[in-house]
Image (tube, rainbow, N blue to C red; front, side, top):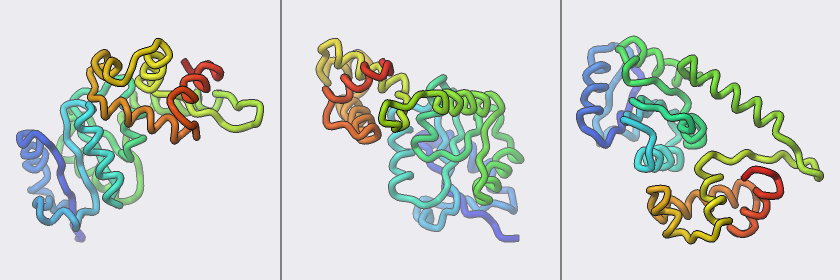
Length: 207
């Protein structure tokens, strides 16, 4: 049997050791040491919640690695699914459900090119896709992208006259994160600057 090489990424060593302890006895899986991670076929990111720090980890993996990524998470908020998908996550498992068999099943599915979501998250994803399909084309026929709640909040605060530092304070983000959010919006919607983004979002009823 060919064992799947798995890299485990967790800022908290207790979280990392917990998943490692679950997987090491399984003959289907080879848990890699840090210095071996270039051999990984699957990456598992283990976090308490999808916050700014863990999002940065996922985006780094998305930029620097071609392997598929699974997310093992404790708390999963309302807006976390879209963020996870945007960060290249192909499978999600709640930590409370992370038994040996489920972890191995998730890893096997990733290797086969499949996605894995809990039932409630799948329903949320289907609702989101449905909203995107209903969500309107402009007069030129170009498909509009919806905004995440935090993107919408950043643009609303800009429209109210707040600067980057004030927005970061209000939203408990770093200024760099606020700038990254604005960069993502302007790039995705092909806009020139933040003023253009605010005007565009308001005209289209996105904020």
